[in-house]
Length: 385
Image (cartoon, rainbow, N blue to C red; front, top):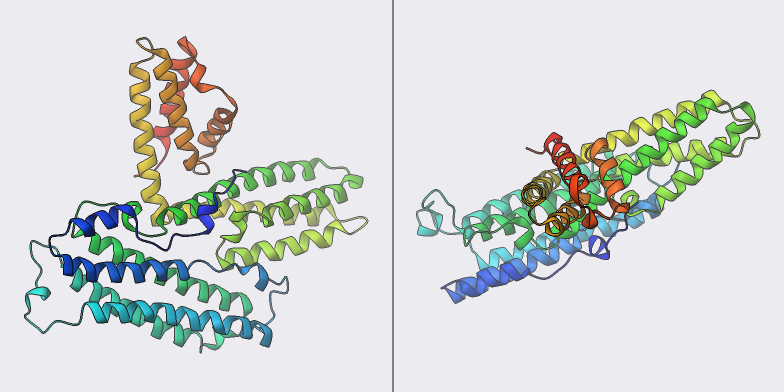
């Protein structure tokens, strides 16, 4: 399983270089200063609203209602979530007070809203989110179940973070040509976290498929050993960054099934049918985690990586005969970049695993050309558009 950068767990809380560049180049220094204060508050909010570590709240007893100790731990999280969002709203109100109707700041010029209007739109949505959070915390169907409560808190924090990120991107986009990665604080870390969940989940899916086949073929005396091996494999997954970054309801299923695996692992003669059922359910569920590919943050990321790799491979193919060393270097660079797509498709994953061990930069002749063409074919089969 690929290592995780520390950046993926520590979102930046300062402005990005591109955002600073845009602000410094703005002809109205006072206006840029007001924007900078909002962006600094937004960066702080994004960092403060980072995903909770749910590990300490986990329990294999899935039908238990939240006890007093959980409420005592969650109350500060809920309070801080509201305070963090309100802190940003206060800064926006101070720097961009509501404009009277008909004021030029309220006009849409050239089809583009000015930053003040966009901020007021975001304020409305954030304020509505706070109201909805309060209503959810009073909803019996939410507060009566530990995992539903955790999922709702996590969902609201994620929604707030996405709205604040959009606020930064949309307002910065009115000032210059930018991408989310260039201006949104913490964007790179969030992409890395999503890429990590996808990659490690894909590897776990392969491990579970292999385990399922072994259990099917196991003799009666080997069933317990397989259960114990499965427990080891799931425990290893539980120590990964991917596990920490799972959504609460996904984590709930993993916790339930890990508990069942643990029960079977300590039985002297566990039933093969029972173990088969558990492994099959686990494999199906983990394969379903590929839905992470539908997250907007990964869709945008994957398109950029896909396009970049495609350009490198076209250039590499054109240089196979003319300059093989450069061609091989471009192939190796494309393969290294494509590791960020690991988990999207099994055929591509197999190629990328092989590429990690193969000295692509040293390929020559027919092997070089053939490898580039195989890579191009796999890339073309990816549905990223």
